Image (cartoon, rainbow, N blue to C red):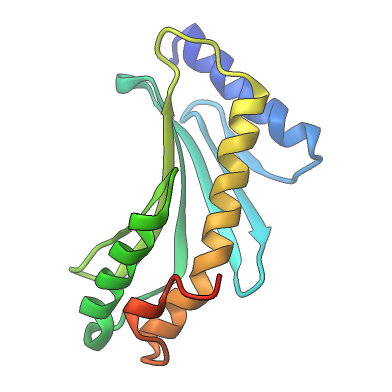
Length: 153
């Protein structure tokens, strides 16, 4: 069973989503929310969850494609170029299977998390994934050089 602080933070996450009238699936026992958002290029499936051992809120989104083996090195390089320009959050590329995800986190240890903080995190996550997922797909298709991933945004 989750501690009171974790349950309060989880309620804050759900309150923020409710305030926007989003449809989502929550699992109170696992302190997890799943939500799908529409983007320019792809639908974005987010998992919002609490890592209680470290008192951390994690929002992540696994992209709907994996880098093919031939483009995996270019994909990892593209992720590095993107991450260098991000102020909050980051993309990860698993070079073993080509999976790419975006993650943004914050700690709730010793503080009160407002719906405003959760809303900010969620907006950053949605905007960042939507901005780059189509470009990462082009890298995967060999149609965009990794060094050009952040140009003309």
